[in-house]
Image 1 (cartoon, helix red, strand yellow):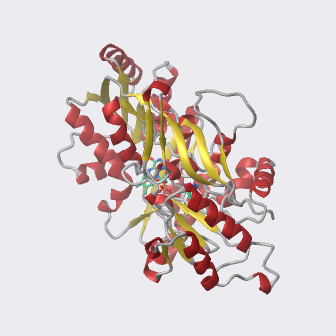
Image 2 (tube, helix red, strand yellow):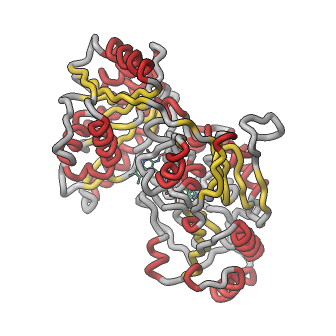
Image 3 (cartoon, protein in one colour):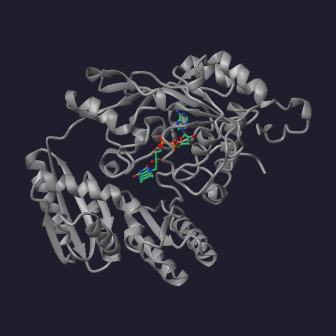
Length: 478
Ligand SMILES: Cc1cc2nc3c(=O)[nH]c(=O)nc-3n(C[C@H](O)[C@H](O)[C@H](O)COP(=O)(O)OP(=O)(O)OC[C@H]3O[C@@H](n4cnc5c(N)ncnc54)[C@H](O)[C@@H]3O)c2cc1C
């Protein structure tokens, strides 16, 4: 049922009945297909790509900022929780309505409203799927660089709310680097703009950066002006293989500290390589623990960078190979995007559970986190696959278990906890790009110390009765 907000639940008289809420919502949205309480639909909105669950009371699919504003005004006055949702590909329970209430499915607000090449930007609605955005930019010779593995499904709103990144962020930066202005509906229905069209501004607090990565806890994003980048003229891909994942990690540190800025730098340990080989038999892959480097720019600059990478890797590499064609490169990237989901090919009775999957450390400490993760998985006795955007210190850890076995689930949680703590001990983060949501909320104090109290104060200032995505990021005071 619809829940009262934490700390306000004392007065039964404040309880809002679902029927009266529905009636009010239908006055705002006069289309039964866009307001649903059907149990089967609610179930679909009770999950994201994590293991976390929470059932909404009602799902609403707005089409405009005006509708979002009216819905939030209503929810604010009736003290009903509101959780914004993009495509639900989040891996931390971010879009799961832990306290019930309204789920705002933003996926129907999915237009590119402007491409303004002269100003190096475009304006989009939040439900736009990331790859659809890039299809729309292609004819202009531009692109939006942040590229999560989920880019064929995830929305721009979800990417901004999670400050998502991906393969090419080692050179191009995360989503945050591209957000110029957000139209945001605050908890009480007020609509604000956080920035403008200008590429830089030093006028006042940077609310754009505050909203980016706030996981729907401070406002609902209804429009975004985003920087776009010219498509590079040339790209090359090199596969370098090593005798161990730690050795591969050390090569990454050497390449990056030699001044080369690859456009992608992905580690694929030997287990990952065997999964890829099973996924796509056409792929030509080396044996060993592999680092895939991509460089982009002009023909001349990419040639020079390829040479530099080969030089930095050759003292320890067991092989260095170049993708021989555009098609070989595209096949490699398509396969790389499948890795996380394909792991069960290795042992079909086991599934990957997304916990402890997104740690990040300073670049110099990459070899140590790789070693530590292997040590933890050996110690706990669970198989592990290590891959990810290691060029920016981000290691994805895929632990896989038989989910029907209680002891394996216990081991999994122990391993995930030790991996999170190891990353923090190395000066890192428990979430490089997948966000905190509910899954990692217990590490907020440990990672942020007293800064968590500042975050809580900001939350109280912008959402005083806590209706926006409650239960996430450990924002409710102890
Ligand atoms: C196979 C796979 C691979 C992945 N690879 C990557 C990767 O390489 N890099 C990466 O960063 N992530 C990755 N992810 C995680 C996920 O896809 C990203 O975090 C993505 O940005 C989530 O987008 P979404 O539209 O699915 O958001 P959702 O899961 O629907 O929501 C995510 C968060 O955003 C909030 N939100 C959504 N829309 C709005 C809005 N309009 N206003 C305010 N808040 C909003 C939600 O409340 C929630 O807190 C991967 C996931 C999968 C399943």
